[in-house]
Length: 611
Ligand code: ADP
Ligand code: MG
Image 1 (cartoon, protein in one colour):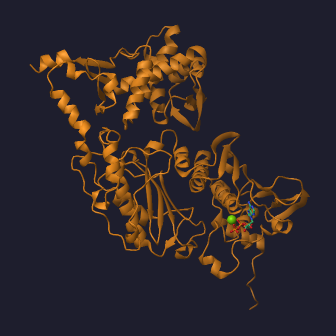
Image 2: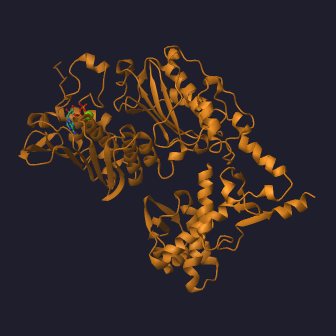
Image 3: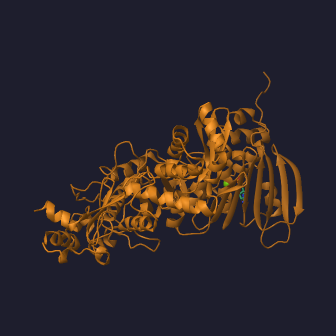
């Protein structure tokens, strides 16, 4: 029988390799971003069209490539990052396989421009299906830029199996966010179909995390900082009350590389045990630094699984440091972007195998209660506690005996009116109390009770109607349009009122019986948008409204839906801000729907009741 075995031609071998490395547009984004980081870029721009199906462009200001490297980088197993087998066991770069560019060039139309900083000219290479079409000297900026077009043009099976645009773009966002979270000092931008999605300037980690998470998230973060001989653990966990129904906000990084680990994830679940409801997932951003020799990155082509030599030790460090931090958070005020004086393992203990600290749990502490009792009022006590040892990091039992707290009761038990003057000037000595929807706070004449949700409704109503008078309301484009099945009648209602809805900040389109909302008034929180649209429909459809009142009725509907979101009054400062905003409204006693917002219980009434 004649010989039948042949070596595969390069372009076929590359296509096969591409099947492993490049699964979807997001894989290209990841590989190009990693290469830019390995090239020491300080600024990287990513521009995407049609979720990467039409264009993926990545422009960096890194070190660029020489004329011959510019061509060689597309060859299989061409890498500048590994020289000998030993290097494989001490990787400090993101890439090392030398497969990514060869794979991408095998299945797309690629244009690359690159220039080294010390040269006047650079090179432009055009390559399609592994074939070099152009290789010329050009004038271009320092660094490297890649344009990837028509991904999978010659692999129809892959192209056809790409998911819908919003899904593919979500994958791109995931990769981009992982890189952004692991390299806060790099200026990173992302745009999709010419609109800017992210523009992260070089910043400290806490700020970067807050920017990725979105507005107001700084207050949700609890710092973790632990150093041992085997692993350094830094980062943040989200406070237990911000646990979510999905795993979205869970990030592990080792030596600045994102990875997934169900084993370490279990350690975190254990640390949060008893603090979050069943079915919810804690949020975390944990950064491990370990000796590169003690991990194996090379277990999976896309490199999100990593083997750790000392995984058991790391597991127990994760559990203990998160428990300490959570214990501390419950007694410490929210920290700002300043350097944090976090709890440290005493030096002598660092080389010992850690034992999980025993945590003294305050049985009365309810993590789901909205009260902010212990978070900001007792800063004096909190800082005292920070200096105590591991086992003293309980859940705030001590702080409940704060002298201010005792004072509150002492005053209450006094009988004369004079000593009961709890006016504004003394308010900052006292905590607010929240029960259900109500905020209780002292006033000049007694106790003021504020219906918090109605307060929010009134604030949003005033904000929108005030700006509506002078300008159209600022609207915010949605990353993924919200789609709603609607009836013919509802289509008519929406179309008839289109211009006023537009003025209010809504942008929308119809496709048969699906309404797509592309932009909403920027005061609306994402979780309330859908509610808001329902409110609008029921308002216009079922109420007789004078034309002139329509705008205000609609603003009322938006305000009502905005108030349905979960109250997030976790600190005294937030409560104070809410009250201040309420008092700035022209009408702060009744909502637009004529519901009472504030009630004051006078001392006389209390005296009467206590007779
Ligand atoms: P790897 O990253 O595993 O080395 P790649 O195929 O991703 O393999 O890249 C091949 C080589 O091309 C890299 O080792 C690097 O030398 C060079 N290279 C790729 N992208 C860039 C870039 N943006 N800037 C400078 N050099 C780059
Ligand atoms: Mg690479």
